[in-house]
Image (cartoon, rainbow, N blue to C red; front, side):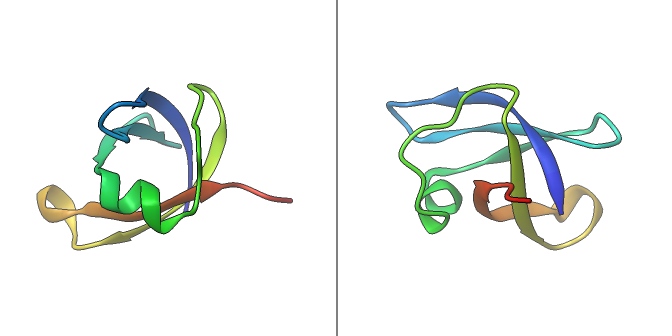
Length: 67
């Protein structure tokens, strides 16, 4: 699934993305680390993998979107 980086905190390596429908979805350090990224800037397009549905949906991987 694709999204746009919305917030990112270098200290905690956590933040949030905006899904294409505008819904914000937070991610934790484990999801950030799983993608192998070193830095994330707001506005970057990312690829995410999620688990769960609805209110239980959570991000398990964040990486840069490649074409």
